[in-house]
Length: 159
Image (cartoon, rainbow, N blue to C red; front, top):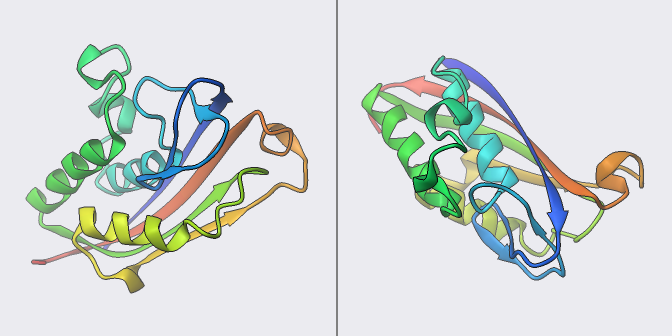
């Protein structure tokens, strides 16, 4: 078994759509990034890549490479999943949290879980997604950005 941790943060800006956990969120701001800036998917990817000791998402998908400009993060997660399965690992458990003062995410959580499970070929009970605020403290609390953290447990063996 292998454990990995991931973290990602992006700034909220006008003029971009907001994607979290592969789901478009109805909100007046979006996240700024080279890709679609999906903080939750990026944190999960970083956790998987870390568990496999392959560096981080910037190493595999550098923001200096135009082929990743505005790319859907679900595509990148699928590539990470393929790397994971080529190394003969599967998802045992993911625990993740999105840190945002706004928007409220509770109505999107189950759709995020379902989306992630489909890409990662795992059962819904293996993927936890939570959301929290920072009680108006820090950049998240000031609604300047959104962060996400994820921990993943991988198990060697066939799917």
